Image (cartoon, rainbow, N blue to C red):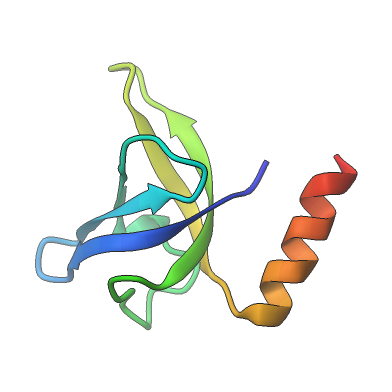
Length: 83
């Protein structure tokens, strides 16, 4: 299920960042390779949709990050509510 959050930080030279879930909880780490579009670097406060992957170390990570715009937001939220 797609979750939504805001970019907290992104370091393009390290290829890593964090996203804070809208529904609360700890910020999740992600890598440049986890971005659906890698040609545009995320900026703090931008809204992204993402999936969560639990790694073998027990930590959760954001994957498949997709920048949201107003029309994407409504479409994705409607799809998520359908189940």
